[in-house]
Image (tube, rainbow, N blue to C red; front, top):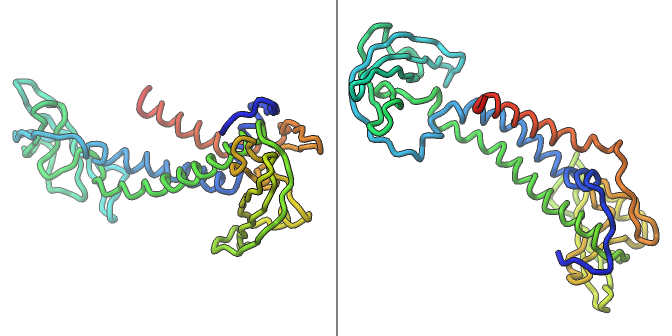
Length: 285
């Protein structure tokens, strides 16, 4: 967004964070992303998916099973077993782990066919077995955090626009041009699309559109306040559709968002801190 040299309202970092993390799309997005990432850690990171794009040059050899463990994981109601074995490569002895669904008929101290990577001998598996408990098909669970991420990005795009306009935009009033039904519903309430027209300082007329299921926000007055970019008037937003919009007086001055609205940061905070902590503990520490 272009920056006006004559308009610059102060918006505190806290106020910006509240606006950026607000809105129904943000809530849905963080909920899907946070919940979906649980399955990502549990399944995808315990699958062969991370090895999909790694080229392997397998060498066949023999190994001896030293331990068989039944994991607490299942696939199609069949338990997944962990096989720990020893094998030799390049005159050195290695210990490897391989996984299989269901009982494979092996026993401890039995000889088994082993495959290891000629370029990375520490990477091995029982022939026909897996490098990880799950196969790559579990990648489908990524759809849940991906949907959440899409919602988050959609929300951020709109909220970043709102933050910019609150700081550098011109405040004016628009007249409603149209009100249309959409096929969307939120909390069983139909979402409507509103279009308002306004005249910018350059004397030309522009339109700004907005969607909401909270129709009272745009139907409580004969006209609606909006903010637009003075150098690009088509870049505008209806003020009442800015989530947790700060109070603005008639002169266009805004107040900072009170700290009691910090609850909007709880869900994103839990998701970010929770998954970041898990990643550090599981893969770094």
